[in-house]
View 1 (cartoon, rainbow, N blue to C red):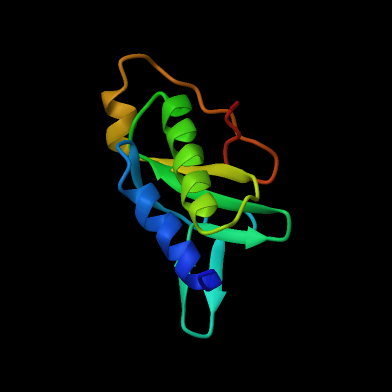
View 2 (cartoon, rainbow, N blue to C red; view 1 turned 90 degrees about the horizontal axis):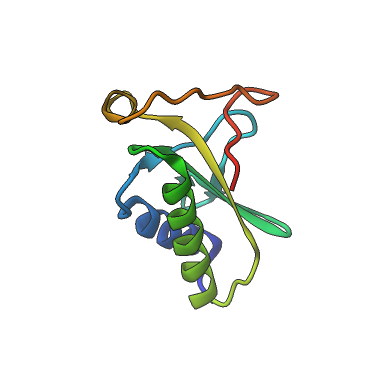
Amino acid sequence: MSSRLELAQAVARAVTALPGVDSMTTGPGVPVVTLSAHGQVPGVRGSGDRVTVAVVAGRLPLSPVIAAVGRTAATVLFCHGDTRPVEIVVGDVTDAALRAAPTAYALVPAGGGGVRCPR
C-alpha cells in the first residue's frame, strides 16, 4: 500500500488529466488537502470513512464532470487497495466554462459557502 501522500498524488494526477477538470482546489469551507511531513496535495482528503476530492470545473454541465471525477478517483483508490466511497466537491467553475456554456446556468449557494450539485 502506498503512503497517504502518494495515494493523494495519484488521485490528483488522474483527476486533473480529465477533460472538464481545470484544477484541484482546497474548496470552500473545511480545506480539502492531504498533509504530510513530506508535502501536501490540495484537493484530496482522506478522512476516516471517505475520500473527498475537490475540483475547479472547466466545463458545463457539471454532471458529467462530477461523474468522471468520481469514477476516476474510485478507480485509483481501488487499484491501491482503498475501497472508501468518494465525495466530490466542485469548489468553483472557470469563467471560460461559464461564458462558453450553451445555456444559462444558475448556481445556487449552499449553506456555508460553495455550491451543492446533485449527483
